Length: 280
Image (cartoon, rainbow, N blue to C red):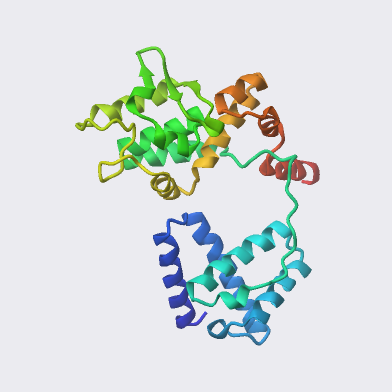
């Protein structure tokens, strides 16, 4: 790799981090752009002088060499982001990309036990009481991030042995009450005890105002996760423990129970492990 190419990548990745992209996304984009650069060098292209033809032929190359549609689409998304960054949207216009059919028989992406423990360990090590409380609440109540940021202190009820959070305006303006596990109560209590303000919002930004969805996303992105993954993990854990599907739907705020049933399907990682067991 040339020094100029490395400098371009570093500047691009600084831009991605400023936009709140996770380290996992940055790593994936690194691999894609390095793969694109190698292909350009082998096929007469130049990274400094990209054309629409370069992009289309690279996409064709990916398809012809066994990349599944989802992978091709993800790599194309990287190229689109880079094209936008260098103000060359013309090179990604009307590119033919294989369609990705929606998958209805695979559970939404959730965290496995080791990933969940890693997240909680890293958040606790950083020591920010607000971030610890938010992470535990998202993971162990399954709230949507929009529901979390809308909470007021009055929406939370806690005692030594029990506690719950009232979601007043969930999706579809449906309210629900979700019990809070002891670990959630512990960390939420610690956060609230160090608050000296009288703001009604349950979680505040660093500026002392109600925290935003974007701020929560940015906080979790530092640990390589998205709030939706924590919600998916909550639902997946309940379903995998054999909790009645209607109970899970009520806790998650699902109006359509078929949405909840998706979590009883295998995950992509479980399918991969099944193949490994069968042929190893």
